[in-house]
Amino acid sequence: MKRHLKSLREYIDALAEIGEVQPIDKEVNWNLEIGAIARRCYETGAPAPLFNTIKGIEKGFRVLAAPGGVSHQPGLYLSRIALSLGLPPQSTGREIVEALVEARGRDFIPPQLVQTGACKENILIGDQVDLLRLPTPLLHGGDGGRYLNTYGIIIAQTPDKKWTNWSIARTMLLDKNRMAGIIAPNQHIGMVRQTWLDIGKPMPFALALGVEPLIPFVGGMPLPDYVSEVDYVGAYFSEAIEVVQCETVDLQVPATAEIVLEGAISATETAPEGPMGEYAGYLWAGQSSPKPVYHVTAMTYRNDPILPIAVAGEPVEENHTAWGVPNAAEIVYTLRAAGYPVAMAWSPFESANHWYVIAIERNWRLLIPNTSSAELCQRLGEALFQTKAGMGTPKYIVVNDDIDITNTKEVVWAFATRNYPGSKGEVTFNDEATNPLVAFLQQSEKMSMHTTKVIYNCLPPDEWGDRLPQRSSFKGAYPQELQDDVLQNWQAYGFAR
Ligand SMILES: Cc1cc2nc3c(=O)[nH]c(=O)nc-3n(C[C@H](O)[C@H](O)[C@H](O)COP(=O)(O)O)c2cc1C
Ligand SMILES: [Mn+2]
Image (cartoon, rainbow, N blue to C red; front, side, top):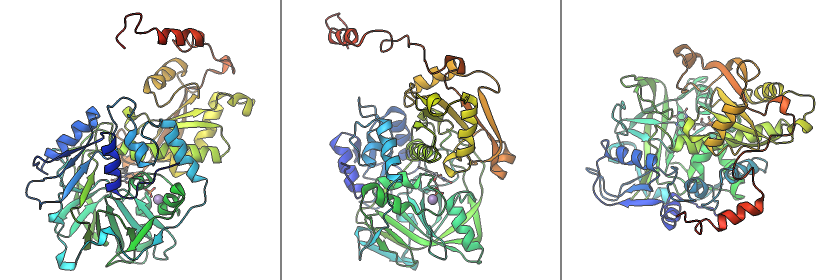
């Protein structure tokens, strides 16, 4: 039974129950200090910092960082991801991925419109809008500006109202009522915006910051074109989520959002945006580029609002969890739907979303007879690269399901000991659509958003057949009874732990 946490505040309470949030009353500065503290939390597994007092910002306005980070507490490594998805905090990566996959097969449930909600406790319209009141942090030394949106959901709808897309894309603060942000043409926000450009109009948007914890994970999920993420959110918990009508645009936002910004993205106006430290772990200092301008026409918020932030950079932060994990789930769903015996997919956090690992059922040679491992990889690529699930990175690693792919040590071992160099081991695909933020792409590929993709064939070598060699390890080379005895006697032998 899932536990549906219906607001950011319910999520924070659930984090507090397991020691995964650290309220900080000492005054902190939005100018790099919040970012530095958050980075240290991500990199050490410390609890998510909740900044209660921010210099120069009115009392009550708060910031929550690392809402989707990982934990250094034993057994709770993935607890923030698990709780966000309504699962027990000790859940494994596999249980998390299966929960996301399972909901993909259900009937989608559209949201329910309600009269009002917490996000309407304060309503500022037109000239009253003042984004400078919000505790927008300068996240990294070298960033081109202060980032207001790093973990909120941008809601956009086609003019015919048939497709409502909810996704995460960063926005940088410009002044009291303007932001600028990335709108990649191959992301859904870019596709929806194109339908407005086609009729020569600015695109209305709503940005919901501080929403219930599942939503950012669905905002990061590469669901297919024309699918509305909010309907998947309904399917996931088997209940419609409550939305309220915006004040100045014809869009609906989650009723419990902490902060909602409404307005329109100009069809013509741009402003320099970036650079910002990114999920690959790099910051290209000094490189800004023109991005579309968001004009804000209304700002509504809960009393004492909490701005959630992701401080992108070296793993593990929310790009690796709230994007990497649902992307892996979408790979599983897509390949299973295409008929392939996929047991699991995962992006090892250390790879900064640059590797997705796919585990194939151990008995695949029986299920797909007369097929070499390289041929299977070729077919997997053909199925995957037609879909958005296969856009996230050009590099995939295919292994047998005897490998625990959530354990990076096992992935490295499989890659090192099972991958044959050259064409049998590296199945390549030329000129495929890609996410342009992949670190190693050439400048021309970032522009064309096409590159070479590779599947590293790390399935057991074909000559091994369906009989894997025994593993030479504690678990692989000793009878279960003896293993149990050894564990039982561990302290008796004199070991501390
Ligand atoms: C914390 C976080 C930040 C993200 N920032 C961006 C971003 O700035 N630009 C972008 O194109 N995608 C960003 N993404 C990835 C997209 O959310 C993801 O590709 C998603 O599938 C896009 O939604 P869509 O499938 O509806 O296009 C981010 C994801 C997360 C979890
Ligand atoms: Mn979408």
